[in-house]
Amino acid sequence: MLSVLAGGVVKALGLEPTHEITVEHAEPPEEIADALGLPPGEVNCLVRRRRLLASGIPVVLNASWFPLSIADGTVLEKPGPVIVGGVKSALADLGYKQTRASERIRDRLPDEAEANALAISPERTVLDIFHVGRTADGTAVEVTTTVTPAHYLIIETDFPLA
Image (tube, rainbow, N blue to C red; front, side):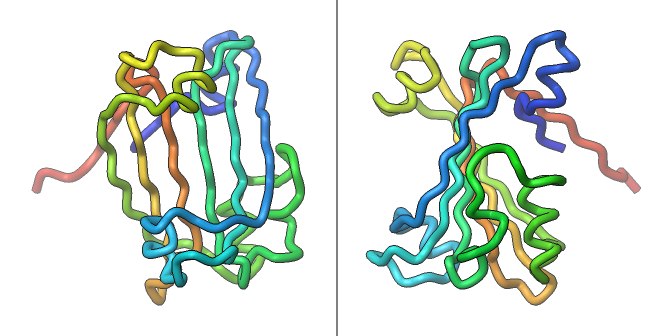
């Protein structure tokens, strides 16, 4: 299990979570278009961007990308933290239940915009998580990128050894 400080975790730590969420139709970066099986260079995605603050301290940047063919005109387009159960529940309600996900995690230095949004020094390492959610037939229906200062990440695993 991978746990980046989320709203529930923030509350459990005695801090107050605040979500800043924007939603727009956008042209995805090439890596995201490729993961979603979409042609590059077109406005063919809905992106929900979120900055999570813990008692006023920015701790996480997320951008969740969905093909417009799935997300256009749905609850996913509503601004703010209004989706009960999160985007995975919303996608399932739309007939796109995710049954498999892959994640790539790498450390790197933040770009200038990320350093500013997270209120950290540009020399401070961040973790960049690239998550792809797929339906049972293998169709990618969500790509979420997460950027967080490395010291905010907790990784827990549980797997059989026999």
